[in-house]
Image 1 (tube, protein in one colour):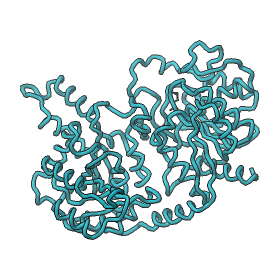
Image 2: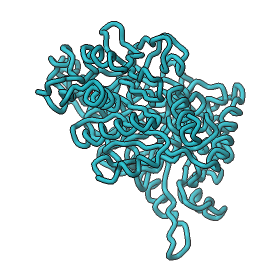
Image 3: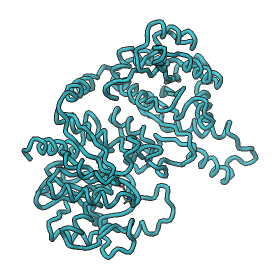
Image 4: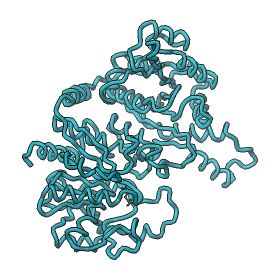
Length: 533
Ligand code: GLN
């Protein structure tokens, strides 16, 4: 029987509940327990795929092709697991299946209601996804008190119908704000938010307090008293130099021991050294002179839009004993080229929509001509193909049909299967696809494998016909999706560090297993910086 840990949030959003959930998962995994994590998102969208990244942050793609909340990225990076579409439960998915069951007559004769039909559907998914694990952590998105999250909280409450049960616990993450005018930390918002949780019928077992400053013993006592938890169950989570240090902070306060005691679980081993060593190495890397990396895109206002990418760059930097200074360049801003000339490595990331496209193509040109290490991801690879076609292969006005449907040279085109699709949600080329790597290529040197698998999220492809034309002028297709003859990786015959990939390697990088593409990209950028490339 799996044990369940519910994680709720109070006071404000963006407290880092996902990081807390992932950190707890990492600690329990270190005890030899099998762990999975589910994220509940209270919005009505069926998945995150139809939301703008500058509103909701990055869309994280799983191996099985689900477009999910970015918290799943944290779960994968902290726990070294591969999540699936079942790890992200949205209100949209729940209502969709309840309504579809109603239409099929499954509830014949009944009035279909939030309780019990919606809550039953939520619980069914919790039980189904968790059945093969020792521990299921369930993070409930939003803040206690939101109307939208109520059915999820009610389902969480129902999972522990009897207070004496030791298979379900609740952890509440709150904010203890610091008021500079009076130079003090305030516990009142935490008290209110725990009160709100109690009204719903949930008694928290552990309270994690996000704070800017350390909590004094008195403060902890006060929170413990007002919220009816033991003093040691008030855990502080102060701002720290890296999210990867959060498991250490929680461990020092014994959160793992408390959880195992509450759930009556025994530790099977203690395997945490690798993580500690990584954080130690990371700390030392932060003291080095940085390698400057540009991300030239358009969602530069909300950093969460490129979450996995930023993390993958950081993993690659630590693997090279350095740290990266990441510069988000707005390619719509006239002066961006000046900044580009100060960079040691340039990335054009994935994206949608025409805005900024010419700036991205200009960025590729700059990197290619100045031999600055370049990595184009998805739309970035498509820009690289367009740039090469226009400026090297002489195909004037070459473009992607996504932006110029009547271009004379559809270098990036829509394939017949995608052309038929009219609906938007979940209909792109999504998830893992195999890619065959060409021998004697930069890609082969990087991956040292002949066959790889990477995650996709796009509708358009580098048109194989133009790939052939460009290859006569020095472009190499070094990775291919054989079944459909689609180019997946492009590079230059000259072997300068220039690479475009149709997939998203950033989704598979973890601190303990940095992705080879980012490791080698940073290595090349370091060499460029030192003038040894
Ligand atoms: N807009 C492009 C396409 O759909 C690229 C998508 C992406 O970068 N993820 O093909």
